[in-house]
Amino acid sequence: MDPLAINGGPKAKATAYNRPNKYDNEERTLLQEVMDSGKLMGTDGKVADFEAEVAQAFGVNHAVMVTSGTAALHTALAALGVCEGDEVITTPMTDFGTTSAILALHAVPVFADIDLDTRLLSPESVREKITDKTRAIITVHMAGMPCDLDPFLALSEETGIKILEDCAQSHGATYKGRFVGAIGHAAGFSMNESKHMSTGDGGFVTTNDDQTAKIASLFRDKTYLRGQKLERGAQPIPFFGLNYRPTNLQAAIAIAQLHKLEHLVARRDQIVRRYYGELADLPHLDFPKIAEGAQPAWWPLAIRYTGNTPTRDELVQVFNAEGVPINTSMSAVKNILRTEIIQTKKYYPLSDTVPSFWKDTTYDPESCPNVDTLQATCLRLPVDQRYTDEDIDQTIAAVQKVWHHYFQ
Ligand SMILES: Cc1ncc(COP(=O)(O)O)c(C=O)c1O
Image 1: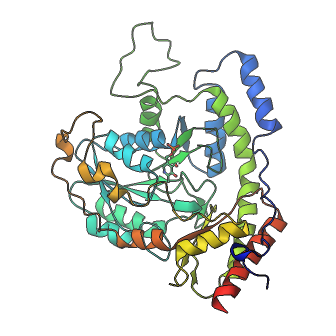
Image 2 (image 1 turned 30 degrees about the vertical axis):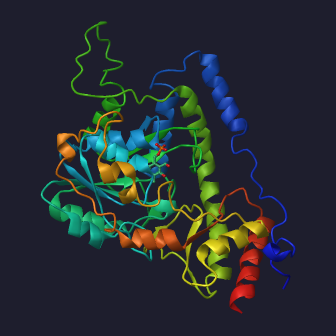
Image 3 (image 1 turned 90 degrees about the vertical axis):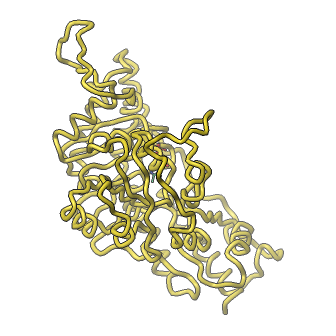
């Protein structure tokens, strides 16, 4: 084997990864149609078309498009009946948007630990956190991997607590033959630029329940009744809502992106199957355990390094020198329990007053140790549908080279 690149040897991955622009002629054509229509605003054109197409594609009764994943989760929680002072249980290893959606309703985020093998919210830990105030559980399908939903659905059946699926990172993943987002009481998807389907920024809610969809649709549009030929000035405004309306420009791109999803998921799966097949037997590497019956939609693959020498962070440097970018954190914040806002409960930017709904809550930063362990040991192998077979050959060769150097 060649010497490591960090010691002056040749790079295992000497060329850049293939990542052409993911927006192409289909996006351009649909965008042009919207431009030509002269109507960028409104939810009855391309927005309605996208909602119908995505609902059909994911086998769910309704989709309601909004402006971000955070907006989708906020809207969905409101539509599921979450009120001030209710508790919502989720993982502290997610995007902060999952938490802000809860706080936006003056509901209390409660954090349960993950299962280290699956990297996902642990049903056992969630069960321990349930109180008579628990109104919803947000199951976050992190890194494209579906949570094992059956235990959560059983918990819901037993207690009446609602299940909201956070599908921001799992477009097109399935669990026991159904698409994620069609299984819980509702789901929130993000379409920010890093997601499987992207509109730059964007998102949508899915649900099988008519009433939940109706509330979501009103909530994203200041509760205006549209298309009912109301006299100007006669809007009833039945309850609080925000402006989370997407434009037809975003929807045009969303439709084109949806058409690429099946191929994208299949290609990512091919790549990850190679990682499992060719690397999973290496010592000191722990690959995620996938829930029975689940087909992930894969993001960077969250493997764990279980050795001590070299350290995980030294390995990252070694891989970077080989030309393989390995990032280590599962989310922008490693553990939300350790953020300033959660530790201080500073809700308002210019006031230290803790709002009454949050006054009595305390958070122990040590209470989700599996999250800390995963974040301290994680090495994320790159996954992208645009990578060539050669990119993957060289990535695998880089891992084998580094492992040969240290462990054989
Ligand atoms: C798991 C998860 N939930 C929620 C969000 C929030 O989505 P957005 O950034 O579109 O508001 C994200 C986005 O990064 C996410 O990854």
